[in-house]
Length: 447
Image 1: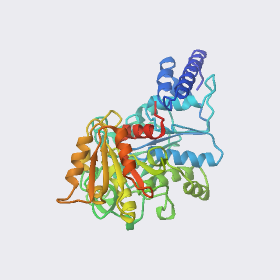
Image 2: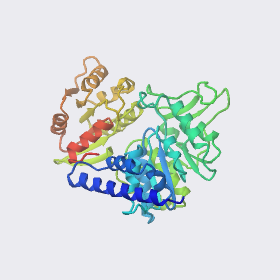
Image 3: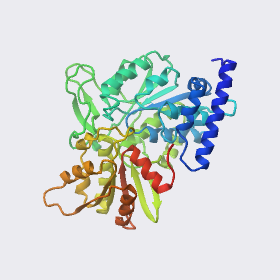
Image 4: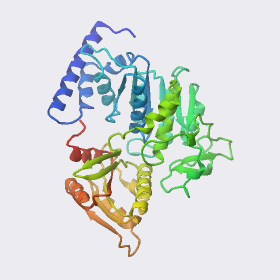
């Protein structure tokens, strides 16, 4: 793509503005400057995104899905950087257009020349079709589709249909990597003409005892008939087929029992397999991938571990029914061995979270209460969450104490005080709440 002199000048001005704003925000310790510079630069050069996409030397990798984008993209970045590649990556999780522009501008010089072998960009589910208007990626990685912010997205089949329409015009050499355990994504992959590869689990020993309440898509995406499940790993992800039309799970390109995993929770096994398969498709040796997995550290708020005043803290983002069920499952597996401890649950209803919080009634909070100990509750919708947890308590249950704190700083202080020195405080926040919690714990916000 040739760039006109006019576009080049405007891109240079956009870069200068973005770098100036970034420097000021960070100098004044106002945040990470992951969104604002992109917003300002687009006003100067509306073509900033396509102009920079064309400069990525080896290819753009887009990562989409409801849960796991930030962790998976960070793992893949770490693998590629271990091989000596230079990677542009929206590490702060800013996955709307402004965040993508900011990320790429950070990797340019003062005249708008981009210095990156790969661009690894996590992309919001609704934004993917917009991004594909300006980009022909080398890879698209689809992790999963769960109900998340129905006020913004709609149902999962609607999102899948938008994705299919946007991906269909891409050239055949584009590689699409999808989670075969998700029926919706598996069916999507079976309809595409591009090079499609699938990851997933083949470990029946970790099936759930039953299909959870917060299940999204147990009907055949081809004919609408109920799917027959041999077993589920989490939510509607599992081993399935349709007795009516013959639709079934596609063959996997990875053998999951051979793979180690990053961090805690089964959901992170999926993230590991997803990033690992992309790396393999790029020709990276499996031994090098395993070594990176072994030494991986969490992205912010995603099983991130902090030391706060001598107390150990783990932040587990919990932004929808499936995500919160899995974080509760992880906490339950840890604390049922070590005994009851303290949890902090923070529920907000801002735009990044979704304004409808009725989803908390689809969460199996009974398991969290069953652990006992202390649960501190805070957030904009503190009383909604407190009511949900109160209904989760069995009649006469005395081993779980609920503490309500409207003020988040007070809630954090109380939770830390209630946590014994040898135990871990687990914090389960929604998205905007996670940013607030981290800001209070580390003194750094996202802007």
